Image (cartoon, rainbow, N blue to C red):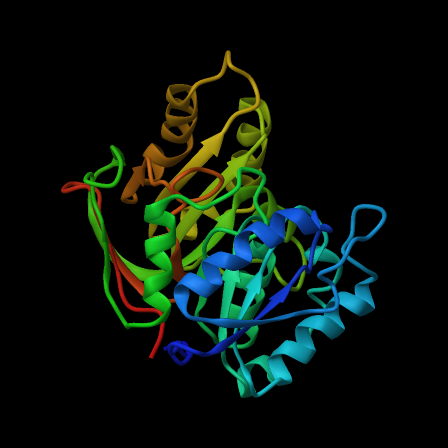
Length: 303
C-alpha cells in the first residue's frame, strides 16, 4: 500500500512551483483567487518568475525549489502550476527518500506525469493528476474546481456517464492500482531506470497535439516493449488531436487495434487530461474499472 498524504485543512499553506516550462505571470495571477476560494494560503517557489527560454530555471534551481517545498513544514501540498517540458531533465536528481520522509500532496498533470510515476514508485506516495493553475483559458470550470475538494476529505470518486459519455473498447471488470498519465511522457521513460512498472496495474493514458500516426507509434512502442500485455486494464483519457481531419472515432479505432487482442478491460471517453472539465484523480490508489457498466471507482487519495 502506498502512503496517502494528509488531507488539507482550511487555512493550510500550499507551495506553488514551476518544474517544467516557464509561465506567464499574468496567468498565474488570475488563478491565485481560486486558492483564496478554497481557503488556502500559498507560497510562491523561486521558479515562479519570468524566465527566458523553454525552462523555468536551471535544472539545479528547479530541483532546489521542489526540495525546499518538501522540507518546508508549513507547506502541506505542492501544486505544479505549469506543464510543458523539463521534468525529464531532473527526475534523476530528485531526492525520493526526502519525499517519502515528508509525504505531502503533489498535484499536476501533463509533463508532471514524470513526477507522478517516479514519486509513486520511488517515494511510495500517492499523487494527484489534475489541472494546473497557470492556464491559457482563464478560470477553471466548476467541475474541475470541485475535484479539489478530494484534498480536504477522503472521498471515493465514482466516474460514470453522468460526467461524460464512455466507450467500452474491451468488456470486463478489474481492480488494481492506477498509474500513468501523459502517453508521450510514459513512452519517453522506456529503457531508463524510471521505466513505468505496469505489471497488474490499471494504466491511464491521455495526450494533446499528437497526430494519429504519432499515437500509433507510441502505442506500438509500448507493444514492442511488451508493456501493454502486462497491464490489467486501461483508462483512456482525452486525446486532443492537432488536425480537424482526425477525430475521436479515429483514436478509438486505433486503440481497438492495440487493446482488443489483449482482452483486458478498457474504457475510453474520460475527461481526464488536456480538456475541460479536467477531472482530478489520485494515482497510486486502487480503482475498480467496470467496462461493462461503464464506471470507474477510485479510492480516496488522502488520509
